[in-house]
Image (cartoon, one colour):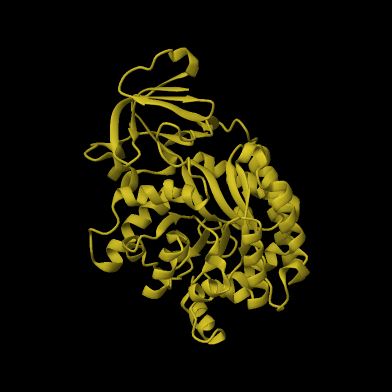
Length: 435
């Protein structure tokens, strides 16, 4: 595809107008002010008038199959939300339930300009199949919950972890990665967690873990582990000896932030989910000042209800200003980086997340002809504060169209919606009967 005279967000997230951008063999082959030579080699010419080309988004923390729980667990604090609603529902989800629910998540993400996500859940082979069929990218992991202090190798979940490394890592011509994971400190123990972290190092893979999501989690951790915070506990056991995503980090202090920065840990910030569960407000501005890579996540649909990353990007730019009474905190460029390049780096996708020659053609196009885009005094500011996922009209993953003008070339959306609705009804009925 060749984008003709289109506005773009360049590699520094500033706007350049009337650019030509050529995509060839899944890579951004050309960016310039002038029409490239041999334009026929690019195939379709895409008219750039009233359009903005930007990097596609990388969702750094999701639970994709939780689309089945959208609207199911509402108005509850985290522990009641987990123990009374989510875990009983998840206990009745089959592998095929996970497959169809992940397909629905892929459709929603592609619709809103997201091409890759870091996903932690169960039934990983079925989730990988859905991502592969949808043509998206994902970093997948299985989420162990282990209260009994024994090595991870002695739990049934270990077989799925080994299968992930052997058969899932590298699927879809490298679009799908498999990585290590524990659910959180409060759902694990020293022995099991340490063996998971050692396994990740042995297999040269990444880590993904919930960290300091609530105040009670941090207080409980300090009681259980001689005053250590979750961040300190994880560091002591080697969780950060490999590239890691620490999801949430709402209740981290200055010492925790130093540790995260020291080890190059990515914080997956989930502002919508954190507010909905009343977890609090992560100190994002302090993390950015310390050099922590901050990426954005939607979390699962039971605690956010949609996969529109534009919503979370807006909240990332707004909340630090209000919480700290400082309007200068978090620039549009920082929010855009977190939603795109920051997430790509968190997933180990070094050649993704920017509109830059030689990078993978993970791109989305926005229709900027609507009233909320006028005037265009500052385009990046408009993207962050006035943009919506519904403005996306085209999403490319490795140069392939995964959404365009209301059509999903890789997904039969109506069949997926019907399957998800039927499976949700089945599970809710079973829960009601067992109550």
